[in-house]
Image 1 (cartoon, rainbow, N blue to C red):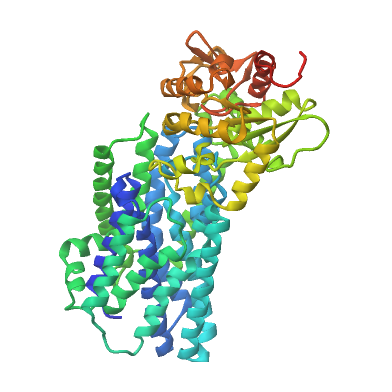
Image 2: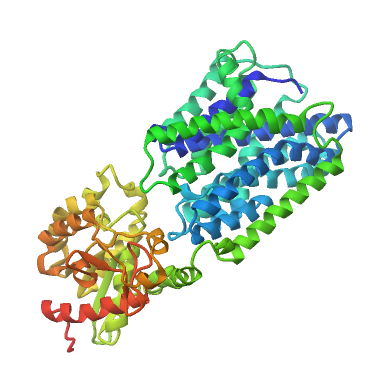
Length: 620
């Protein structure tokens, strides 16, 4: 297969936006599409090789996997090995436990399946996962596990049928991804078969060029490059992905592969030494950038600034060059590569893979407390504190539940997981006195979705098309509000919500009457690391100062809602200090959510508060 410098240059266009996007440079808001560019390139190159070897009847599936092992494993194992000491030194047990799982999954090329299982609300922030980016390697390797077998099976049908099958499979996968973002968006992003169509587009490009003369088009190749650049700067985290939107960078990449031959403007640009040089080290650069960024963030109390992240991006490129020069090339060098014989390569790769699996299992089975780095009593205590399912369970069970006609008054609770805490307390303390229902608000949407005009025009929140997902949702919510005697609004209450709350509050009173109550932002500001920094005997006396921004937000909410405002500070804080434990039990498991013990404390406080405001007929 003829070497094309412009393809290596295209790899640079793929990897640099990914790195800058993960570094937090907002202008590259769609930089994640670089992965999709890689998928198309990879599908094209591998399929071109397969078709050439099948035509010559020289194809060997064992040789195919040997090439993949030489390409993928050495650099991957070096990066994974480099991560281990930093994970041990800098990660808390809960973080280490998740990292250990990822080490196992990466070694088995199943990390995309692991990360989709960890995509829930309470999971570790993605930017703190050093091996998160390996999900794309897993998708590729799963493709290469199946694709050669498929090619051997359909090759005898003739080249025309091969093309038809490629198109049929790609279309089915694209339709699946379009269905997936609408119904299972977290799974869809990582799901193998939602991504296969992008690799298959590359395979279709290889099919179209078999036995065909070289084609060039300045116009089409320029459109292709423009499409990629457009996606890098126009897409963002709210763009449904993967979906038909992914056609823009994917088709753009295909146009470059098909029409950016030498002599075209795009080929000249991409063949420049700088682009080709970065393209050659792009695989190692991709491997290094995420661990550097993740560990950089783990060591920082706040999000690192652009200067530090930019320096880490440069370090990633320097490490990438060294890895390409001293790791990648020696294993791929002809005619005498390292581990020259096939059995040595597979045996060594298998041994390293098994060792990583063993290390990962030790980390996971120890609960992340490898070699008892932390006081096991604190590890066990924190493990007991975490109970995220409890926060959500009543909200799930009571979601859009119609009120029973049993003579009791009706309480509706609306909001995100913070409203789950309030709902749990109400159900815990007042289940015999009231009927309950819940409306779950998507994380990040807050309660202003009730006011379509205010919400839709605020630039710092999720688009109204996402938070106001359907007329049915709005209609059901309105019907519940109208049938409720009392409506409680609760969320994490970001600054923009407090700023616009007054306007929304007035409209709600006009539309539905004075039935609304507001549960404020929790003022607790602590981290799990603080718990580990305390000695076990001193831990139960730990108190922390209120979160300053949350105090300001609550003050704004209280000025609007008055007596119908519930301030969590009154429950958990006194004289400028907020309790984390009470009577030997934890009240919180993070800065926003309470434990079962915390729910009981909240319920007891609500008894007196409800009497004070005259809510319901409860007698204490």
